[in-house]
Length: 107
Image (cartoon, rainbow, N blue to C red; front, side, top):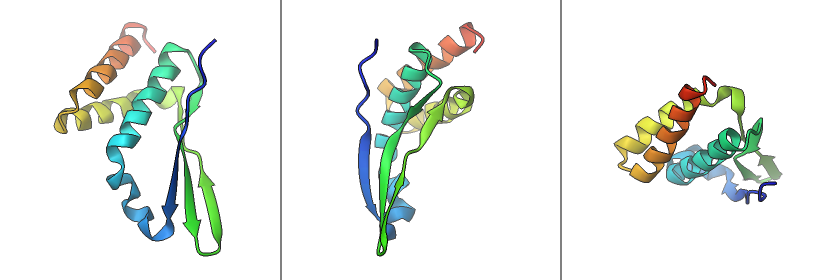
């Protein structure tokens, strides 16, 4: 049995939503890599990536984006490109291991 994954929670004021992803790109990609590893190596169908609470003047909207097993290869390729460009070699290595595993096992 696997240990439950702690889900990052973000509180984002509505006016900062347009830049939220760019401002937190490394954190989101790190969490995405972790979620992808869990999907692949623990044979899960999907994993919730994080929880984003968008604070509007009239209330809060909660978003829970998830990564799904069937759609995992293309995002991994894009994350690999980004991590190499940003010289995040530890993340690049982890992503490469996952891509090789998917290719070797024809997943």
